[in-house]
Every structure is written in C-alpha cells, then in structure tokens.
Image (cartoon, rainbow, N blue to C red):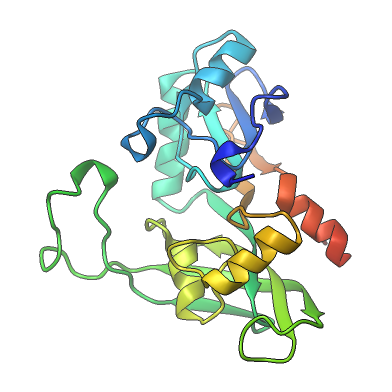
Length: 251
C-alpha cells in the first residue's frame, strides 16, 4: 500500500483539541489539506472533510505536506485563524515534530543552516534561482531514542536509526527534511531528501512506505483567552506501529 492510498476515509478525523474558537486535527498521512496542483486527481481534502464532520465552516491556519501526518489547526473564524498565523510568523507560536531518521544523531543540537528558496508548485515555470538569497533556517533537535538492527542495508554490517524531536524556529519549505539531510541523517520514507535503500527496507520489511515525519505539538497563546495553550497529536499509522515494534516511548 502506498502513502497516497492510505485508508484515510475509513474513520472520522481525530480531533486533538476543540473549543468554540479553534479546532486541531491529527491529520493522517497521504491526505491533502486542501485542493492543490500537487495532485490534480485527488478528490479527498482534509479541509472539506473537517467542515463536513463538524458541520461548520473552518479556516486553515497553516499547511502540512500530504505525506506528513499530525497536528494542523483551523479557526472557526477568519480572525482567529489570522491571529494564530501572526503568532507563527512572529515566532510566538512554536511547532515540534517527531521523525525517524537514518543513523544515530547527536543527543541534541541546533541546526543553523540557511536554505535556498524553493519554487512553489504553483509557479514551477517561474525560476527563482539567483533572484533571492539563501533564507535563514534554524531548527532545534533532541534525540529521544535509538535502535540498531542486525541487518546490513547499506555499507555497514548493521543499521542504526533514531527517533528525534525537532522544533522549528523558522518556517522554510521542507525545512526539517532538508536540515536532516544536511546532517547526513535523512528522514526515512522521504523520496526527495532521503535514501532510497532505507526507504525500501522500511516499506518492504515493516510495511511502512510513508514519510516518517509527524507534526507532534504546538504551543501558542489562545487567540481569545490569551492563556498559554499546548496541543499534542500522538503518532498515527505506520509511525505508531514502528514505535511499538522498536519499544520506543515518548517522554
């Protein structure tokens, strides 16, 4: 089963948080947030599914790539959505992700590695090289657990993997995927920045062909009450099954 064919419509969407002003969903992998040129043939969209499920109009606050899973926020009004967007753009709100990558990372660290701007899928015909300088991109990571498998997948007699929590301090496109590649610890299941031999191993051995990147937590100021708010979305699907298989638990 490929990521795009995941049975995301079999059950109602998982609601991670809801009040009268905003709602947070734990998005399954393989589901677009809204209609997009990324996949013109797709007929399933998280935005419409959520509107149908709650019976109300919702406004997306941010985006989450189709192959990724996890936390995504919506406002029940345009004003609430705009308030949270402003917090995100000013770094008042923070997002943390979980990932599984090749190799043992350092125990913790900060990745301060500028990234070249990427063309948006809507403007592929408009090259931007040499127009804009590299963009500041900063990520903070902490290794949560590791495993060594007694199997030679690449050039080593055994294969090591890490469970990592990453907090992004800037919001560049594909920032985490590109930063982990920069560290030589590519995320498993990433077709663009990952390593295909490890991706195939996880797909064939564990039946997990997905990108192992999950939007885990968000901290923000509630747009109405102004109180601190922490929202968490636990790992889903293949990500969850791998954690159970490897004996990994979140702190």
